[in-house]
Length: 208
Image (tube, rainbow, N blue to C red; front, side):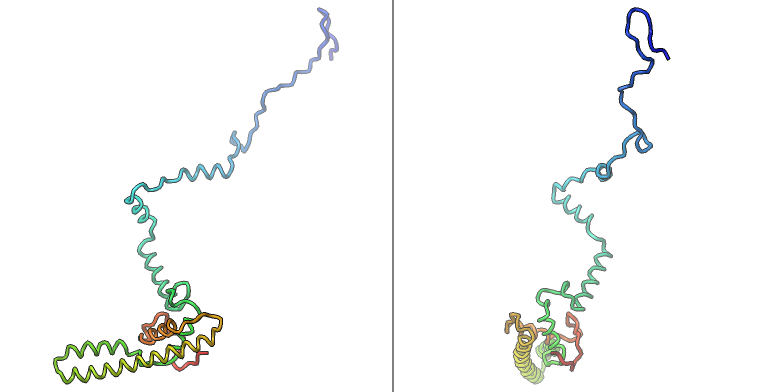
């Protein structure tokens, strides 16, 4: 190794090369470019959001495009009917929801009622108006009047007793006599197999 170089009175220099100051090339990910962030990549994949509808026709078209098909709507309706018939509170109408209304239904469904013949009685009344024989019309009208009066009396007694039992079972609930009695009355006037929700107690069962 040479330590000194003569000539021209210049100072001696070393043979070591000067360090480079240029930027270093870094190979990242094996592709020659840095790996993009997940957020940036997801944003590029999603693309811009579609513009909102500008007219009512465009809004209706978008709603039809996002609406479930006929089979899905039919399946959802069938499930709704099954849950409603089973007494699921999530699918019942507001008038049928709650433990108090369920108890009233059980009380009504636990025994037969003369009011269950209300619909057949209505048919008899219509027939009495169509029969041209005056005597038959008189007898049918008299029978309908007696049956209707008996149903009203039975409905009043049923409403009063059901309200009293509901208040005894749910002392902390606010139970109105008129609303509870009318609910029991309308439930009893329906044919048993047509009642919604379906009866969950048998006739003759003890409800407490």
